[in-house]
Image 1 (cartoon, helix red, strand yellow):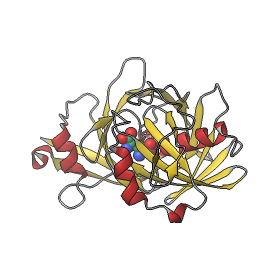
Image 2 (cartoon, helix red, strand yellow):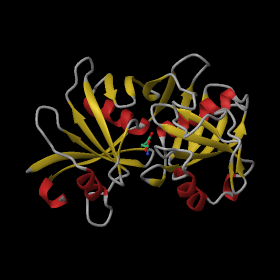
Image 3 (cartoon, protein in one colour):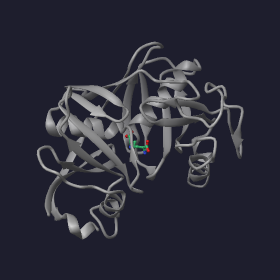
Length: 267
Ligand SMILES: N[C@@H](CCC[C@H](N)C(=O)O)C(=O)O
């Protein structure tokens, strides 16, 4: 079966987007992994599958490069809003709203959740400052912004070996659904630099939900004021949030090319 796709990215976090509205494009974990493979597939951090939805313009399903289906992806939301014009997007992490203006695409991501069962953690702990550590990374803040994140604030980002610590923390039994690992440095009263080890994808150039989780954790700790500029290796995102409100994330989305492929080539 032949399928059409669009290659897109948000600040270098790249996606293969398949529009399966009105036709069945059966995606298994093995197929998602094969499509995402950068040597033998099309190559992406996440495969995005669009389906029809009731009560929303469309449903967006997200498969990490390791084939696992997950709940939310901030950068893909901006790409899908730009590609399709959708303004109400249903995801496994909740219904989100999108808008566009000269500043870029803005996504209303909904309210963050902080309960230990919401992250989820394996057992009750204070999510504002987890009393556990990994090789000097301590007092992490756990936040669910549609998907699970842990955020560490460090004095010097370059001093941290995220490629060594990221996978260890991602797979720690404290996180029964694994976790996205964010390491941030506060660079000003409303600015942060951030690197993210993504669950199921590894080190990416940007992570939209990671930027949201990190900005929220920093505001909650009184480290920065909103709106926050979050600088990632791929560029900047703006995050607005006040306690009790929804998170709003603004940034770019880019279309790279369109293509077609045979589904059977991927298993
Ligand atoms: N790149 C994404 C997040 C993708 C999903 C994440 N790796 C997870 O497993 O939750 C973003 O821009 O938010």
